Image 1 (cartoon, rainbow, N blue to C red):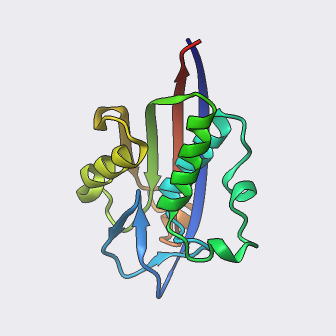
Image 2 (cartoon, rainbow, N blue to C red):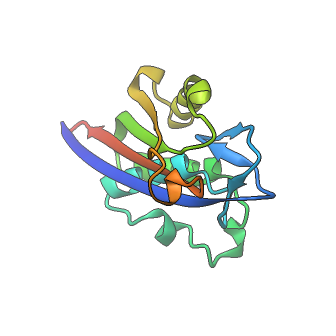
Length: 160
């Protein structure tokens, strides 16, 4: 059996007049994330981790913000495309470990719902998905409530 690990990272600025999506779930909040797509930092980090694990570039290379077809696209669609690329490589997801970093909104009340949705999108058991939520203790732009960050690590396996 061969295994591969991928790591992903994303950050987006909070802004008015946008909905907030994290892990494909709309989170009730007064601000949303600024981006060419729906700016779901968690799904973007997972996409980058998956793409890295199969050596297929990153989310910006595969879904450039210069391409109008990705304007306001749901990150669920981007993840679906990445999943097809991963499946085509013969790998499957063993587990995903993520960290969301935000001062606001409080992520804890939504963790289980995000976990269930991410597991469903990745077609794996919920026990194979970890969603951790942290703050930046008031430090840097995230700590000043200007944005949200996500990290993701994935382990892929393939039968030899």
